[in-house]
Structures are given as C-alpha cells and as structure tokens.
Length: 460
Image (cartoon, rainbow, N blue to C red; front, top):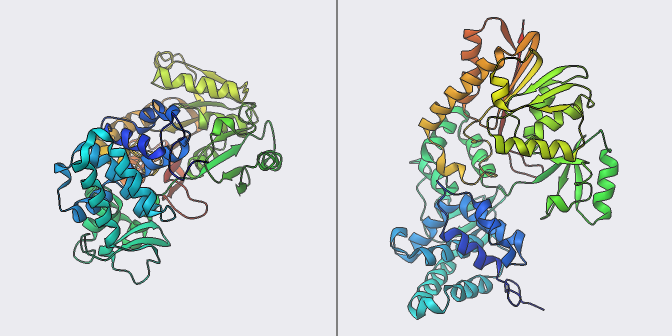
C-alpha cells in the first residue's frame, strides 16, 4: 500500500504534477486546465493534482507573501523550479490543515530532485521548516486572531502565524484584502466603494473558495428524485440544492456520473441558472440565444419550454459553437437550431419573441472558477468590454418583436458592466422598459455560488 502523498510505481504524485504545471504557468497567457490536460495521465491522483494547481493559483499572492516573509528572500530571486515547489507546499501547509506537515515538507524536498543538488534541496527544506515554525495554528477560529497574521481558509477557519506579514487592515483595508485574497487592489477598492467592508470581505472569501458542482436536472428526461436515487446508488454523495438542481459533494469526473451520457442533467452553477428563469421561455416562442456557447443556457431554454419552442443558438466563435451542438445532441433536444454567426449577421432572420444575451464580461463574479481571470482583469479591459456589451444589446434590440423581451446577463458583479450598461441602453431606447433586475454576489458556505447579474427588458 502506498504512503499518503507518494506515487505508485511509474506514476508521479499530485504534488510533482502540480509543481510542474505551476513552473510553466503564466496566468496572463495560459489556462491551467489546458496545461493539466497534458500531464494528468501521469498520476493516479488527478483530482488532487487539479485542486493543488487551482488553489495555488487562486492564492498565489498570499502564498508569495508567506514565502518572501519567512525565507528572507524576494520572490523574484527564487529559482522558478524551487518557487513552484514552495508554492505547492506552502499552499498545503496553509490551506490543507488536515495534511501532515512531514508529508508536505518531505516530498517537497524530494521533488527538487537529484539535478537540484544539496544546496537547492537544503534551501527548500529550510524555507518550509521556517514557515512551519512560524505557523501558530494551522486551523484556528478567526475570532480574536490578528488579521496581519492570518490567512482565511473558509469563513470559519484561518491559518494563524506568530508574526505580522500582511498589511494593516485598519490603515489600508484595500492592501490587506488584496494581499490576503490575492486580488487586484483596484478591484477590491471598487467593491469596497460599492458594497462596503463586510460584504466585500465575503466576496473575497467566495472568490477563493473551491467551487461546488451542481447538476441541473433535465425535466424532459427524468425527475430530481430519480436522478438523486441513481447518484446515491452509485455512491455519489448528492443532495437537493433547489427544486431542480442537485449539489454534488466530493471530487467526481462529471462525464462518468450516472445519467451524463443519457442527457439527464447539465452542469451549471446556481447563479448561472437565474437568467433563463428570468427570461421565462414558453412553448411556441421563437427564441434567440445570441452568445450561446457552450450551450448550458440554450439547453435550459429548451427544457423550460418543454422542447416546444423555436430556439436559434449562435455564437461568434465557431469552435465553441460546436460545443453547443454536442450538448444539444447529448440531451437529444429537438427545438434547437444552431446557426453560424455570419448567417445571423446577413439580416435575413425574422424578429424573435425573446432574446437571451449572456454577454461576454470581465468574469469578476466567477473568479473562484476561472482562476486566471484575476490576473487578467483590468479597469481598461472592463471599459473595452463595455463597448462590446453595448453593441450586442443594440443588436438584440433590433432582433426582438414588439412585446418581446431581452434577458441581459453577465457573470460580472461590476456596476459598469451591469446596471450602468442597462441604464445607458434604456436612455437610448425609450421603446424598452426594465421589467426586473437582480445582482447575485459570490457566496461561500454549504450551497456556495458564483456572482451574476440579470436584467429583463420588455419592448413596449
């Protein structure tokens, strides 16, 4: 029987795989998922390797603060290979309190490898020993702890150090939140202005959570009760989250879950399911999903209209539009027609009863899930994408019938992409009125979820 954290013969450990991915990872240019796909067949611990990589990326700035503080060396002066090993190990020390310290430190030193030499192995060992010496409690109650010495694991637990290494939250709440939760300072500043201190802290916690998996039950093929029964029969820990959504606990390969190949469910976050419900699709309607890839909301439109609407799905990215085709085929939906974006642009399309515009956005509501986004989002990028959102709304306005509706949604929580965009549209189009509007902030907890914005516009 293999020891905890050690690889089987001819296979590599999750830690070794994670360190390899992180060493070559540029968060501005690369996607962690794609890099993991190339190496996961080298380990039996696929889910663990994935979790280590994603958690290390989510918390990279905080990890670097710990490493720099207790190694006495700036991050820029640490060799890339050693830094990736240190990030993986520090991530486990701080955020995986149940994992034994000896196992983390031992394997980190071994992962330096023979080519690293005694000096590099000794450096990694010394840094990690120093970090562990300064950890006062690997899992403490945050109440009463010094915020300059603690990193949050969840809302209810922190890793507590014995030395100040974070900014003073009283003197600079932006700097403290930014460094503690590895988020851009300007973004945290916007949230503080918009939502206040407590809600911003909750948002930051949610941005660094390990996101849950939710299955949206396909009512055309099964019932929530039947799907729950099948999942539990297969020893999958599952529980109802909403009347039509199921929460899955523990790591699972979704494509291997019972009912996947039969189209009994689609994977969708709780927050993402709100847009189509707000649209309220009905049998007999003609409906356009303007930015449909990968098809999750297209499928939901078909489900809620009992597969008896005339649904047109399009997307500007032809490769991603193929994903829509695959998902529609898996659920065996008859009401969806996939149309290339260029064909829609030619203008021969008749007006629709309803248009869903799930607009491209900054992804600030889904930072826990899209781990690279926090390194790419900028204030200028939000201004630029705002122009795209404006143009898409104008296009949607020209494609909807009188008495028809547009549902505008994003996975952003920034006012400029949401409320301000809708107010600007309404100022230009007095033939539309705002029927409803909602902003869901990211949340951690038993039924955690991403952030999302939804606005329903009715053409008078």
